[in-house]
Image (cartoon, rainbow, N blue to C red; front, side):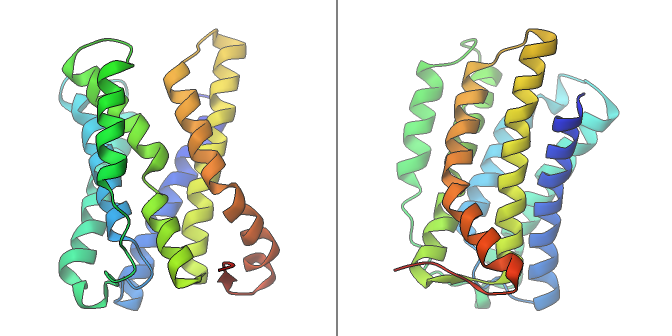
Length: 212
């Protein structure tokens, strides 16, 4: 494992922990898109079904378990534990416009036409756009709490670091995964505007507000 992947994993884990702590400490999931969190739960479930068939390392197994457990815990807190604070009126993105196309694309463009490989490919495609309901929700409300901004920024850093991971692997290992790289580029591009606002506002102590 190279440094970029390790730091990317840490950034991803940090984002998840930040979100869970935000919800638990504030006893509120206001400003959090439940739909995005459901999509991430679907992503991790589809991607890590090989947990029962393919052992790589203790680190790899532990991270898979943590991602799945944390994603479902987040969904549970939003839709059950603190559902009274969930802002469903602003979380209105039509997720079927993300799930259906990515599922169809996974069937058409994959590395190997087997159930686990198709599910893995589906998870890669879906993850690239799973944050859209959250970004859409932020755009509708016009602003995001600082902790929510930190969560989104950490997710963006995770994807950016993983792009460097692919570059490293191609240069030093000759490994090239077209599906993962293109999906990662799409996901990183979605964060670009947010990165600019985060650096120019949030890091200066201002609340992130999006233009109407």
